[in-house]
Image 1 (tube, rainbow, N blue to C red):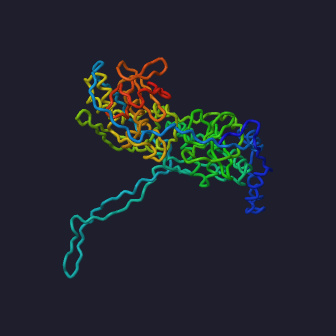
Image 2 (tube, rainbow, N blue to C red):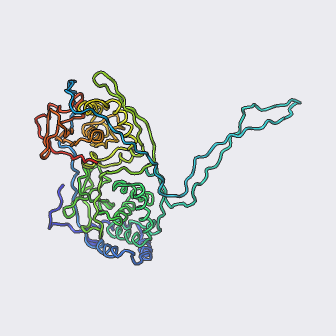
Image 3 (cartoon, rainbow, N blue to C red):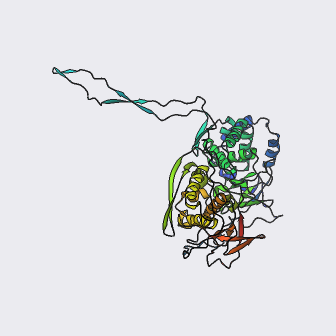
Length: 525
């Protein structure tokens, strides 16, 4: 569906047809209860602490416009291959100097919980030995068995004394927040534009500063990127308000106060939360406001929202886009598991073992479909990388550079089963390199992301992602022979992590003569 043309807005007024329908639908609420509600709201409306709120509140009461939805952009123009036939194994000529991989040891420091409040330990169990007692029964002495014990349950102890209004688990870290009464009592009522201004009035009149300060402090201490902050704010809002409309309005209020360009709209009497993003968020419905796309992130891969009513102007000073890039990892508590990958190469079996943090895997699993640069430039947990690099080092040290890089290429080609995302997840999903290591199955872009990270870190060579309409490979900036692609003024040698048995310089026959659709820049650290 296309956006309304400029100059043809359909206005939404409080006394217009749309609002009349909404108000009539609320007729089940008695007139007296509505007046009481308005009176209670009016009593809570004090002078705003933030001058921006006065102007924005007045603006919210003005006319709204109808906006039509843009369906989400698909990641691929054509479906990816169902199966990929392997290449015929062939030894290539060894080139380059002999390799000695340097694995930088980084000592892991477990993050400290950013807050202190009531936390309970699991009950401890103490074993107390029962002293033998003599008991006379028909002149016989009965002595208990030597190994008999009495089980005593010990009640859990409080570690701290400062409790919080809400608390929840955030990817392995227990967080808690105090909530001002004005935010607790804020309500989307009536279910129309006036209800939105009522909620805003109540929240803006509350003592929200401490809550915002805690969110900022926790975000900084946990090293959360924008997506981490997005998840944190949603968790807070959902724990304060069980009603989804109220929760969405609170998230909107908090995001605006944090400086993010976030809007709300009305669709079928419910609140729709929209985030501005400069980069495309794929398979996600979005709306165009002054040539800027606002995405309904909660509807990623869930289908369209349809027409809604909203406003043009951002909250004053709230212009920051949602940036999904993951340049550094969040500080999450460790929940480590072990995994070993194995593969055959030229008749010999190799194993690569590592540990991964399940909390980080769970965090990454929540991601919507971001742009390719986000995945190609995200790091791997240092402990995981050090384990993998140490095992690879044992196999490639002393080999020539070409052989060593081909070993890593074959490791990525052969350690995972090929399966398309729609088969594995029911939707398109590009994985972070960390996720590709975790899952047993992956497809072309997942392997390209993992290989590009490893070859960049292990050998320090330049690498780009090579995007076709239905496939993703990589190419290296190395002095080796074979199939090449030209990115800018440089020539890169193709390395395809999905073309099993292929070495650097071998393209799949299908793509050998095709010009890539685009390239993904992989930045060096």
